[in-house]
Amino acid sequence: MPGRMNPRQMERMMRKMGLNMEELKDVRKVVIETGSKEIVIENPAVTIMNVQGERTFQIQGKVSERSLGTEIPEEDIQLVMDQTGADRASALKALEESEGEPAEAIIKLMG
Image 1 (cartoon, rainbow, N blue to C red):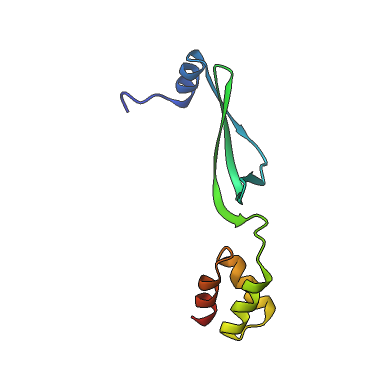
Image 2 (tube, rainbow, N blue to C red):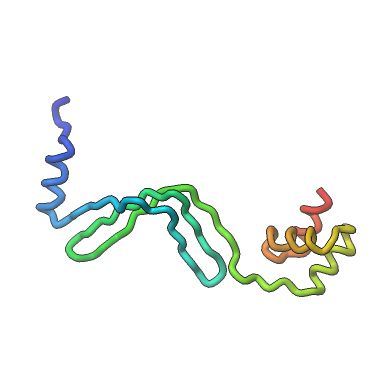
């Protein structure tokens, strides 16, 4: 096809512009921690781009998130148990899944 550049030409041109790309092999998981949650990327494809000494990581894969250390007050657990008739483990699980929001946990268990 006229006008299309083959991969080797593209790589050469990018190097001339000061851009190098490298695929990171055998990566199993990438975890990004914030103050309130973890973002987990399973079986990622990770590419490192080096542009004039500045490294940038591009990550693609299956993304999931989970809250970090959300302390759930005992009163909230008891409230969910009382309102739904659920046992402690079920009430706690529903609260964790609803990020500590009792109303959402109650709706989740009642629905």
